[in-house]
Length: 111
Ligand SMILES: [Zn+2]
Image 1: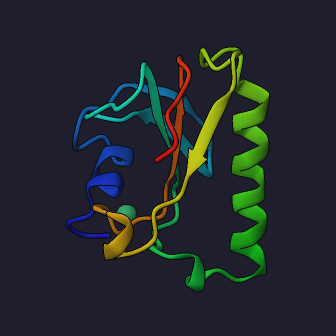
Image 2: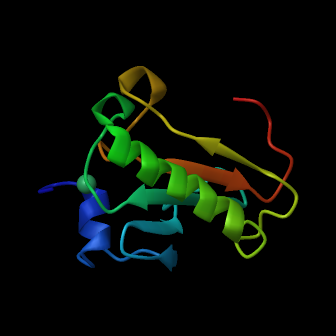
């Protein structure tokens, strides 16, 4: 989608440190990390919110979770990790393209 920073990253228009990609998702490093490992798992399909999901998108989100779990050691998350999906303004969702924050690499405080 036009003017979406994640769509531009996936189109190669904005550089990123990609650590995994396939035909339906990309995992790249957050440009402003808040943990030693801070990655974003982003579906190639542009949609912003969970309430825009249908069964097909729900299955895609499920595959994103499976992929994160399969790659956890390779991504430096052996000691555990936290997944966060911010939804809307109150949650601080700054990019209106659904994404899963993957946080790890140290003991994380809550919040
Ligand atoms: Zn997008």
